[in-house]
Length: 367
Image 1: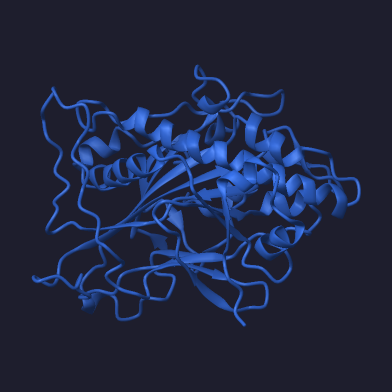
Image 2: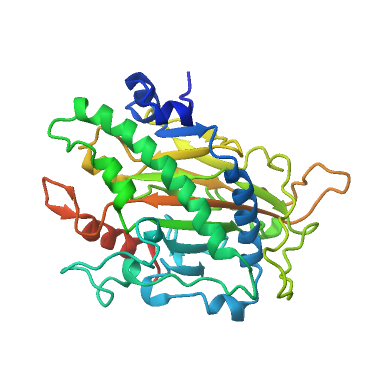
């Protein structure tokens, strides 16, 4: 039987009622390495709809505006980028637009990036020590507060998932530091969030050789726990994400979300521990959490990082309405909780998270 994503309630997390067997089913050797949390705060639904709509607005801004949000010195790990990431096959990824923001505001509202250390400074590690670059309110009003509010809910929920993982790890992993994962999620200033806009697929004749992982190649996250929203599919032909030059607007209109993926094969896929490839559906009113490479190292392999990829909507696939066809985009948000730069993630080799992350950044970005 194929592994399945495990679903738990927010209240059970709050009350410490997640059994070890449930945690093993979510993150153990035979699992998919993903836990879905339901019954999240009601404001999550509205914030998700608005921010994922903003992903389409952002991706369709004029190039001159998007260039203002780019930070090449930071390896594009703050602000906007497109075509700056190298995929597994060596090709440059142009099908995905990416907007990164540091989540140090969760720890201290005055912070705009991670806190420097004696080893890591803005000069030698700008990927993690460059301040956020927010879109102007004149272009996308309310972008920053919407982004921050949604990330806070996801991180708050991640703290509870981390508490459950700690209880399990403390009795299952020799020399595990009590409360370590909760400490990482709650106090780290290196946590990053990535708003993603998967552009509509190019014409059929251009993509005859597109792979299953055409929208986002198979990869591992390099943090501890990654919080994920469900994806929003938008027909941008019928719902053009045109920015309105109206200074009186508090927010731009929420774009109409397709009731279901227009292509049932499109979406998030996870490679299970047994080698199966499984499609995972995250309900719109839930938050999912995956395990990453840093947590695998911290737990000495007890929790495994999750290989996953995103499969795009096939060109020409309609949304099933009365007027078929259209350009279908996919938007989502990922929040990567990870240790502070100086914290050790590999005790055997004495590797700090900053050293580990520096190697990942060098491997994944173009020169």
